[in-house]
Every structure is written in structure tokens, then in C-alpha cells.
Image 1 (cartoon, rainbow, N blue to C red):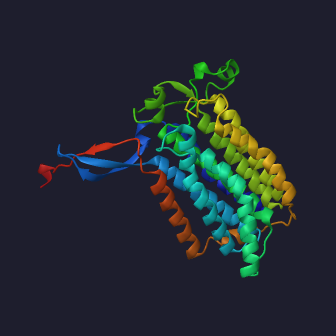
Image 2: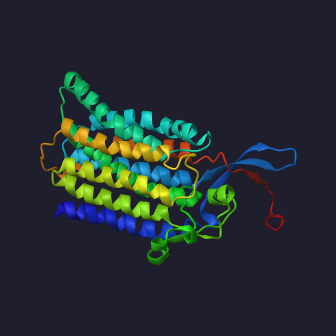
Image 3: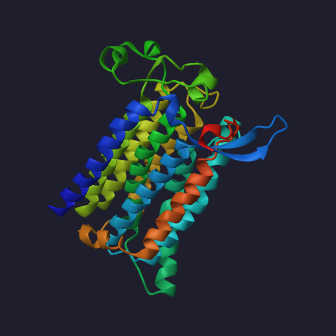
Length: 349
């Protein structure tokens, strides 16, 4: 019963967030949080640094994902020090890779690629976990089941990717094709799943001039699909089915990543099948190999034990630090600018 209550609680948090996000975030109002004056210009105005909702939702997505991984691994009896080491190493690889791979594929230094970072994380993750397991066994006399951590990471990744689509909706990136250019079956049955973007600083506006038009809401479909996979994966995990939770979340996220790019209009390279799609396909046979190399024991975790770990000042500070790092990394806009001016309200003096 407590497993179902835990998953239900996550669902009740996500549902209103998604309903609000799908309605509000395509609007111009929900792209820039604030602008910070950084340099005074000769005109008397200030050059501003824009902080975006893109960074805010990415930071929330990362913290939610890491929190879920923390709870799941804690429920499986994984030591907190082991968890922190694994998360820090994986993020140390994946955060820089998100920009480097985007530059390699899309030839622009001012964008991020979740697809590229996730591919690297999926490939390196099991071996990083195995390496930390070996080190912790020798140095701390602490050992754990590798698949329990690998599976938790995949479930957390699915949740983080789902919530992270709100960032894309806000910035107007990763957008779908105009609904009138979609296949007839999509137009007939899914014409209600659309966004209309407003604002000339949205990527959909300056890249393809599609603001004001109905486009297929591919980010919304992705958010719901990935989050649902994460919720089902959480239930499977908490019932001891680590391998099934891992494989389900990987198949849904990577399979949909491959299919969804055929429904998108944003630039993903010059090929019919993009580099990101090739990456997603390669992860599927790789996942089968991982399942063969790291079998699961199937011990039932205790979700209450995982939740108790959250009541730790070190954990709270760790999550807050991750939030700040992610927000500062992805929330500072390099592709939009602002000019600020200040004045005194004379009637209030």
C-alpha cells in the first residue's frame, strides 16, 4: 500500500504542474524570469542578463530526478555516501557533454542537448556504478547491488526528462511541426494536442517563424509519456523488479526519442535520421547487454526507509546546491538580450 501511496503522491504533484504548464508556458510572459543589469551603455541604458524559466524548470527537473533516485536507492539500502559519489561523477560527465554534443551536432555553442547528455549517461552510468561499487567495497567495506542503482538512475532520468520538457515549452525549443503539415491520422485524431506560441524571443519564432500557428505539442506528449514511464518504473522498482523498471524506462524514453523527432520542426542536423536518433537506437541493444551483465536479485525495497533519508541537512544542502548549479548553467540566456532603464517616481518622493 505504501508503494502505491508514494507513486500517487508524485502523480498529484505532476498533474496540476503539467496542466498549468501546457496552458501557460507557450505564452511570451513565461520565458524570461528577470533581467539583471550588468553593464551601463553609452545610451544611458543598462545591458541586461536574462534569467529564464528554461533554467528554472531544468533545475527543478534535475532535483526531482535526483530526489527520486535518492529515495529509491535508500529504499534498496544503498549507502548515502555511495549515492552522492555516483551522482557527482555522472553529472560531472553529463553536464558538460550536453553543450559539447549539441555543438558537434548542431554547430552552435549556445545550446544544450539533453539527448546527447542522456546517451552518455546511459552508456557510462552502469560502469561508473560498478567502479564506485568496487571502490566502496575496498575502501569502506560497503557493497551493493549494481542493478539496484542502475535501475534507479534510469527511473529518475525518465522523470527528470518528463519534467524537463516544461523548460522546452517555456523557451519554445524542441517544438513540433505545424498541425496542418502532420500526417492525416495525426490531424484527424490528435489535432487537439497543439500549442500556439507567442513572443518573438521564443526559439520557434526566430528559428522558423511559427509563432501564432498551431503546432503539434510534442513536448507535452513527451512529458506525459516519460513521467508515466517513471511512475510505472517506480512501482516496479519498489516491488523488487529492478531489471523490468530499467528496461521499461529506457525503451519508452529512447524509443519515443527516435519516433518523436519525425514530428519535430526544430533543427537536429542535416540528416533524415539525426545523430540523436541513432544514439537512442543504439541504447536499446546496449540495455539488453547491461541486463545480461548485471542480473537483479529482486529484493523488495522499503520506500519508508528511502523517504527517511530526505530528513538530513546534508541531503537538503546537496539538492539545493544541485539546483543552483543547474539554474546558473542553463538559466542564463546567451541567445536573448535586454536593455534596462531606471527612473524615479517623482510623485512618491
